[in-house]
Image (cartoon, rainbow, N blue to C red):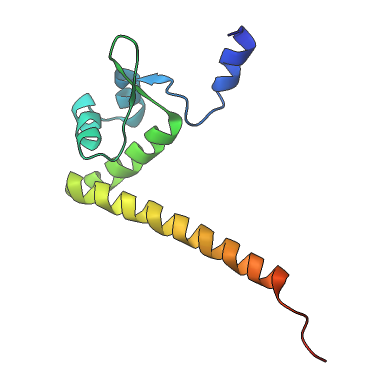
Length: 112
């Protein structure tokens, strides 16, 4: 892998670039919070060769949303479920929009 390849990964939202300590610091939370949302299966950090957790930017955005809900008084398990349902709803809306676009382009012309 060349240096150019490594730098290209910095723009990849799914590249696990952040250690647990750095992720917790960036989110203003504790490492135990990150472990808890991992145990709740909201996010699954990748592991380094040494077994250390690594988080992607995408995972940090999800963790930040969980932190926001928990800070508002939502129990962590409920916050994780809310985020999963929000994600499923967003995906369903995206698919629905694709179906609508496909239906419009394949519809026969209206009679005049």
